[in-house]
Length: 622
Image (tube, rainbow, N blue to C red):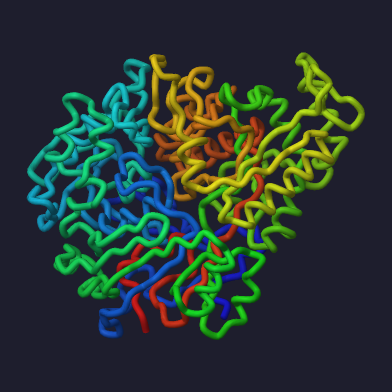
């Protein structure tokens, strides 16, 4: 049964509703925009959280979801993948959530600010760690930020450490953001410049914490290995009453189970909707890892699992099933070709002219209509077209209309490679030895749709660019460990390191295995706070495993946009940034897919708007 708005092939702008946000931060930001589509309504509560109490809910049952991939780790300091994050978040809420109407929803704490530069964070008074670590205090946060997030070098390998540094206008240097404990449950973040969007960025949105008592065992000696192997971190023993569920078991590559937390702190909160009074409403939650697509979908159809993602080419079949509701929503992740510009990739990818030429090689409309069956929009830059920050007049288009095809590709590629050993020999692009250029493209072995995209890209590169592309299937865990994690050779001391996914300069740090292109990972475009994607475009960005060094200072535009309280100026700056990104073509932008999820007919609580899972602890069985 279909549920949700039809997101196939639409590029309509989202409805925008001006609101006065909590503590006046949205006033500093200007008119806030709802990121969901106009006219959306969910099958759960209103997004203001005030319309429905808990009377219609009852606690019971085991909610079973299906995932194509397993988590990498439960130690959130070392992860960057969505599956691992979802496993941990079931037991650790984080500081606050963001509702679909772009309002902050306090979880562990709330914030206040008078000027958008100094933020005071206040924690609730009923937050308790597990494993005997006592009450969560501001000291836990300040110690973690200063000794782990802001440590130089980044000894822990925390992938988002760069977010805790800003350019100090007085020195012109990137420096740690000052933080200071101001009370047992309060601390301040003192930015160098105004940033009214700070609460909406991943630096605080759902930010989690670790007890000082665990971290201080490893800080003095900068013992990264000990921290990564810590048993309490890897079994979530420290989570106490801080999340809706507690860790039960994890059978690698099989299932992950959490059990209802009888001491969940939000049940005592007076500033939350009534439906949180008995949350969560499932006795257990289990994620089954089912790598084979047909088995995974069969489990959804038969009722063995209560939810699963549905590939676009299978959506119509499930829309006609009486026991499954198909929910189609906007989502923030971008489908693209990632080029390896490190020393173990194809060196010409470092050339903007080469990347631009290859942008003409793939028919994006065919990807959207024929592979993704219309459940997507064509992508041209690092922001969806429905975002309020997207400016058509700035974005350069590739892979559509007359900006697609063999002539458009080959003439530009030949010119871009004119001063190299590469040249055309008839229809083939050959190297200095006269051998056709052969490149790899990796995709997730558990995702047949990815395989179809990889095959299509290979066909398009062959026909339009004369490059032989070989699709290679690899599991998600293998790809992350052997192709995404980068490091310098043993015995080499790199000039800098930005964590496990960016182990140093691209000529020094590489992945364990060579690769040329991949479509395994989708990148978050952060429609709430676009500047949060800044790290993708910085040489020292924590997720820059592909070694991209931009010609233009894109991150400076992001920082300037974050610091202005003039909404029109912010739109101009983001528009300029996304225009530069489309010009530089750091990735082969393909599509912004919709999220297509199937739910058992008795599951209630999810909505039909972007970020629908913000209150998943109140979902229930009807």
